[in-house]
Image 1 (cartoon, rainbow, N blue to C red):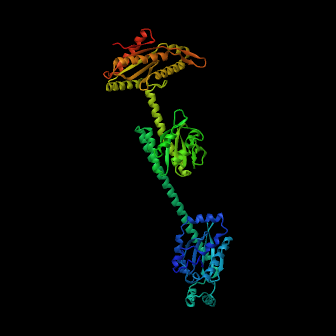
Image 2 (image 1 turned 90 degrees about the vertical axis):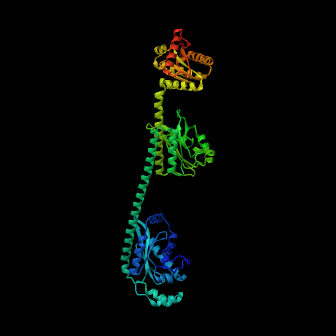
Image 3 (image 1 turned 180 degrees about the vertical axis):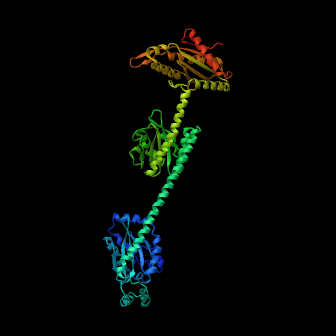
Length: 569
């Protein structure tokens, strides 16, 4: 077959010709279609290398050159070339042009949906071709050529040798090597070759699909294994009581190791449900984390603020052009952030707990697989956050009064023990106050226990406003409250004076009218009896101090209520 492309491809070694684009490439520069593009993509997925050996064996047996040429003009497989082509027709400009004419003519015939094309080129040799169809796609063209249909006219070739300046003896010797093939046998030959090419191509495609499937499954197994290992790590940390910040930081770092190029962030919804607080983002600049801490949630508050507000994922491919990020461009540009994918972190009841965000330095969209991974990581973050919230809830139930939110009796006893230890170290005195409301019972009798609970909450809040932040205010039970004044002074007299001042303020704030019904503007006034006991680190019996303070409180009641009394041994 005649196939040459340009004068710079003057070859003298037959093995090199298989590496070149054929002259047949010239025909595909026109009439390009989507069908052709589909064929090119399909051809790129098939390994035709096994055909090279088959075509060489066919050449050895029949003396006929074969080439399979894609619609983009690339040789997909071919045999070696005949000497008449290599040493003569390709190295002469005139004969090479005749080769071009032959290839273009054959390819053009096949473009017209012909199943068989035959052409006798002006060099005196015959070529033919047929399309290769795979999965109903015209994938490539199979060319066979450089043969005669009848005995060659040696006078013609002698004249052609003289015309083109070939060595007559060498040229006729090369022509004598060209086989003679009966035209009626050509369709059968082409059918045989195309059938073999189809089977090899289909087998190659099946192998490629199998390899891709295996690779995909292996990738899925690897990703799932990594996710399980990360999940086990997080569960282990949760069971060990590791703090939430440390757990989330560890999780984020592990995710970033699995996905280089990602910078991850976890933001936590605050108790008010209106702002996002910093959770973990070790790879983001500190100035950025500081800026987004306490970010309001809402539409247009970046990706995370919007995701927390809507409860839906927010994927921003390009931060610089997206309206949600316009108020933050100076910040994101300083942090080199160009894309942000945010997923809400929800508990089993659908309540938003925070957001899991992924940042990139270049604009980009997540793949379907990455979307699934983001959701999986969000679920893992939810596990850590929910367990932490559950642990905090359990702790509050164990140590805090559910009604007032103040430390309960159990925590008060721990704080008292701590105050004794600290007093021993600092040499400062401390004071315990035992407070009982003098006339609280009428509130429950007149307005009900629900209103009584509201009054107790108000009293607890008022007491907290009087003492220092370092002091402890707790509800001992019923309408009884405990106040611990820690490390007041080293001098006993000064300590007593300071405690009396605080007790006076507490009594005054409690005695102010308490709202029991805002709708009807009803209020109630309570007085209080307060028992005080002075202690230091030399006294280590917490239960004894409680009994002493309680006894002092009853002494205040016995003296007429609405006053405070010091414990007298």
